[in-house]
Image (cartoon, rainbow, N blue to C red; front, top):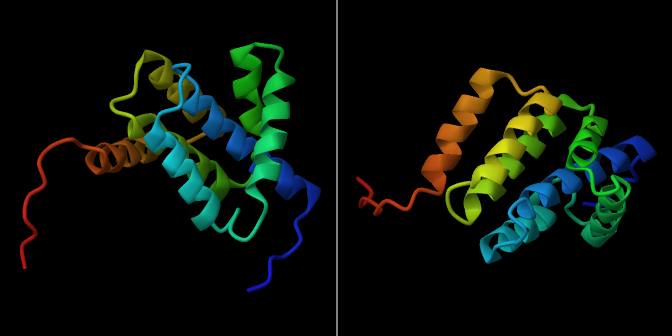
Length: 148
């Protein structure tokens, strides 16, 4: 399937999505190997990035972060560029998974997730449901054998 061209607004929103993911990955100053694996899987599997040069979005996201001048509040504010409701949900879902990928989210990650919920306008009930699913997905509990 050929990759369709995208509008500058679509590119800007995808860059903001990658920017949000990177904020979560570096919230505790170190990117865990599990987070790297997730970002790589998003780059290969999400329809927004499939067949595209993910590094281009990543480089633009780094520029966006550097434009915040070291202000976390300004950096987080950049996610408001995402206007598409579906992309807002996907962004939050990816960020939530990334926050849990290296273990339970720390204080910095939890605070950042709360800020992202607000700035992306994710409804409280949706947040609760997403958290339940992601927490189960990344649970360290022993796996039960599947019932056939």
